[in-house]
Image (cartoon, rainbow, N blue to C red; front, side, top):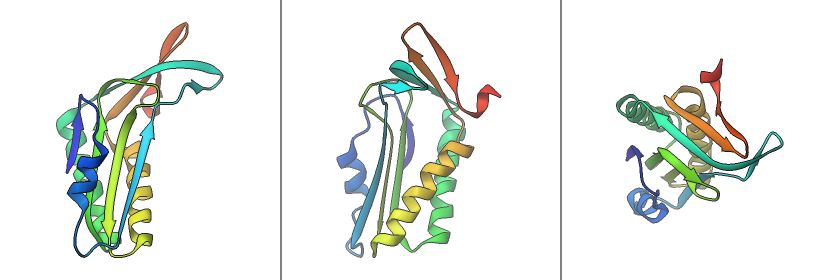
Length: 137
C-alpha cells in the first residue's frame, strides 16, 4: 500500500494491512504538523504533489526496503492538501519477524521520502506562507 490521498490517514488501516502471521513486530512512524517552525507560529501545512510519480516513488522505497531488510509488509501513505496542527502528514507501517528490521525500514522510508518523492510542502504561518524543502532552491 503506497498512496497519496486527500483525506485523513487512518493508522488502523495501515497497521491492519501490514499485519502478518510471520511478523513479531510492527513499527510505525507518524509525521504530524507541529505549531512552530523557525520562530514562526505555524497555522497549517499544505502539500502538493505529482500523484502518479509520488506513488511510484513510494513503491520504489518499499521495494528498496524489502531488498535491505527481511520485512513482511510495508505501507506508506502521504496526505495532500491542507493538514492542520496535530494531524498526520505521513504514516509508515512496517512488519517484520523482529523489531530491528521494522524500525530500520521505517527510518529508511521517511528519509527517502524527504529526498526523492515529488511532494512539496507549503507552511502557512501567522503573517504569510512559504514553501519548505529542496524545491525552494
